[in-house]
Amino acid sequence: MAKIPSLKSIQAFEAACRHLSFKDAADELCVTPTAISHQIKSLEEQLGVRLFHRLTRALELTEDGANYAPYIVAAFKNFEAASLALEEDVLEGSLTISTTGSFAANWLSPRLRDFYEKYPGISVRLLSSDALVDFKSGGVDVAIRYGYGDYPDCHVAWVLNDRVAPVCSPEKAPSLTAPEDLLTSRLIEYQWSGFSDVDPSWQDWVEAVGLTGASVEPYVTYSEEHICLLTASDGHGVALVSLLAAARFLERDMLVAPFDTALDNKSYYLVCPETHANRARVRVFREWLLDQADAFRDSTVGQRFFENQETA
Image (cartoon, rainbow, N blue to C red; front, side, top):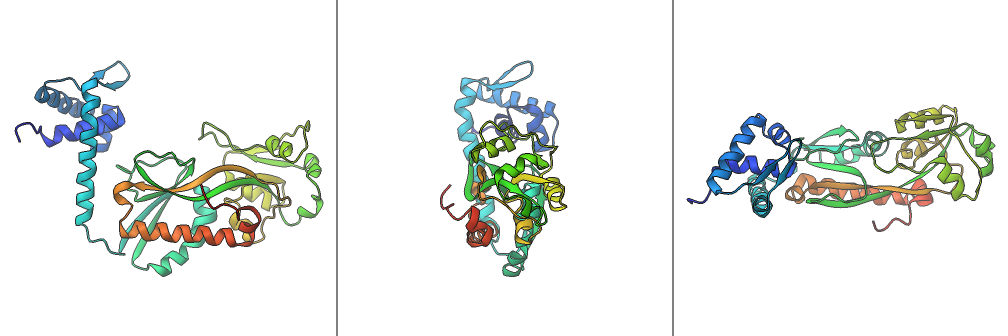
């Protein structure tokens, strides 16, 4: 046991090597950056090696630190798994879910009543945000994320691929008999800068339907997709939006999709820490969510645009 340093210093190192920041490690552990720095210095003295290069505006692991880190990170994962195994794993208590505002409002929330009825002992807390949550410090059990499925060190389950298509009010639809009609329509576009790549644009869509050489300019662009949906449902134009975001509007005939052409976009994935994947509350929610995704693909909207989605 003489070679085991103090738990506080090891904990400080584990957080610092994940964040590569004393400040972020301090925020996670609810201490000051100075305290983290002292703990790391103490650990380096106990081990007799330097673990970090302390640069002006950055923190880098030394070769010794990089060799030491995997053992420490794995050990803390084992600590967490052992502690979770001691908890009574029953279908009671709270389940905190993080997902995008658009997916929460227009696809997930309308279906949650079925989950409540199946599992009355589980209290759901739904956090809607487009920002990625930190499972370590955010108090989140599971997330439904919009992206490409590359979430290291997490359990990942594909839910649905998203597609983008024009939608409009039922009153507007009869005037749109061919894609060319869009060239003289008021076009509404959604554009959010949270991703390094952007969603398909109106220009992408008109080119996909063969209107090569046609130039389109939306009359309004919103950073909130829900505003695009509301504007289109009020009859103020045609919006190019996520069909999953529009699902609630389409299912209730508040919007219609006048054309069958839809462009592939990113996908939704259920994501959680590997240590949480087999907890009863997370497990039943994952199974329920995937069943709901299957049912959606069998629905009228799903069969039209999503029925061939069988693999991610």
